[in-house]
Image (tube, rainbow, N blue to C red; front, side, top):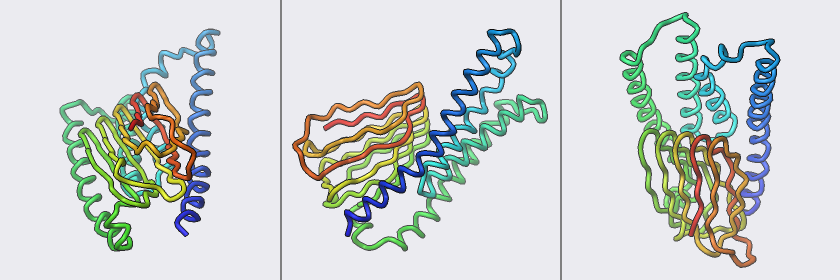
Length: 242
């Protein structure tokens, strides 16, 4: 039964990753077109560079399309909000200096803590006792900080790990997998470290953007314990090791 659930989750994750990759590819093509027009003296690309905060909007949209958790949706919304405010400021419709901006960031972080606490209780009420006790599905978010967690469950099924200008370390060496598990990662100017047992087969299907995915695991024997890692490393890194 759980293996069927994992298969359905893997297919669903594969479908959900397509729109975000399409948007990312379209953005890269657009950047290339702008550079080409600049080289042909048709368009002054230096004007567009001034609106670099719009990249936060892009990253937020990618996160929203690639997440299945309330925490991930909140991170995507925050990134879009920060990018929108900074872009509007660049356009001259409103003037915000750093003295006025950092209190807004504190408000965002406070709202994130409250939102996580409220939705966390609701999610625990919807989960079964076994899933809650064994941490079969994880939902970890670190913003401007660090998160270190050890998971010990006989049937790890995956989840999401998000690090924005922070770091996450997930120790799964005391866990096992029944079939296949899918773990979505999102590292934006941060790092994610995953420690897995030596008998797991790791498949890295992530997309690095000025970042990297690094696997340092030993060659696992042929078995049905397979961890699929998907997501993005944007100016950050994801490392998997034993």
